[in-house]
Image (cartoon, rainbow, N blue to C red; front, top):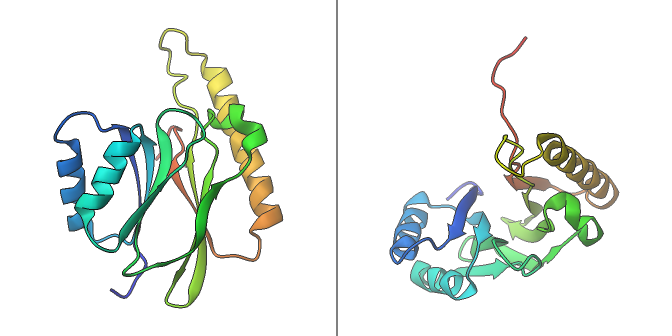
Length: 175
């Protein structure tokens, strides 16, 4: 109860089956998170059912810009105040963001304002059929550059978190 707990979760094609909502709501209740940034929320009705299962105080927002696995937020309003409804940014650069425009949430926690940008960068480039690793990597790089510019111009004086699925390789080796 003394910290703002934020989780990001690519739930992948939510919901996958009849038990998905039950399993996800149970996990969320055990996590004790205040805000959850989700990726790949495919079905609005199932998302609403998930919010209902979480109980009083939980609200959700789902972006509607790509027509498939959307970026979304779940917010526990018993702990966090929503400053305004979430909104998308960088719509004109949709190609680089795999047509999943970054989704911004502004909240207040213990009288401190925070902005959160939920992203889901282009995946793949892993050698699968039809995959072009250089193109996919270039799209992620361009998306990062556009996002950095937007942040510098619009969020330089704010407390900001960028969360989501960056779809990049993590290299833990240090030289």
